[in-house]
Length: 291
Image 1 (cartoon, rainbow, N blue to C red):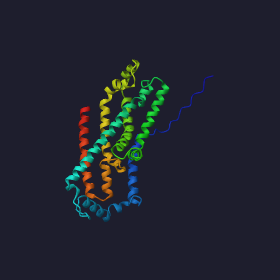
Image 2 (cartoon, rainbow, N blue to C red):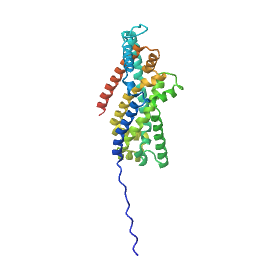
Image 3 (tube, rainbow, N blue to C red):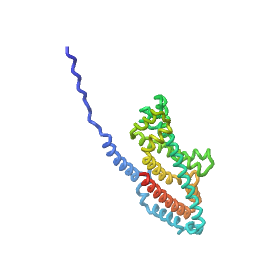
Image 4 (cartoon, rainbow, N blue to C red):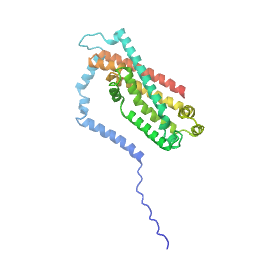
């Protein structure tokens, strides 16, 4: 007796997730703006274009430029001593960003080998499969937690442990960017040819030798690109962590806003803008050298 014929499997229409996503994004954007401009939840479009809004904006600009000051004080940008003080805070902000990206980079280098999926799956990172899986899960969880918590929240927590100042801000920024750098650099490592790393591991090389002789020679340009990119992001975020007394221009900006010293606010923003431009230029030059 011949076996029964297998019933053909009926397949439903194939859904292209990419195209659905591309269609959903503009629809969601349009729907969000429609909700904002047609309801009072976001103020409504009428408030955005009202005369009162433009009057308040004009008043703010005049205060920032020192054209309207109820106290009659001389604008801060005309005081050389104030420029010198703000320049010192800018240097402190720059130092905070360098220290933060250094903390993030050291943390990334210490965890990128056990956190790379391909190294863990192929047995390159650890001798025992159970230890490889446990180390991989622990590192990935650590990366997720550190990058999921915003820098401002980390700063709020850290200022309760450390004294308020540059160190607290640098640690907060470093912890957050450690998770981001770890994930980005692990993806670079996962795309490599792992035959040199396996050869080193078979020859008895440890994790440090594996990192510095098997991986870094191949991935150093990509690592430097990601590190410098995150440094550009960090310098923009320093003013945010400064709002919780983490030092630098951010703390001075919060104080100037609290006391309504508008020309001080304008001066701090101008110096901060110049600092960001300088860091972007330095980062771009270093990235070109890394390539």
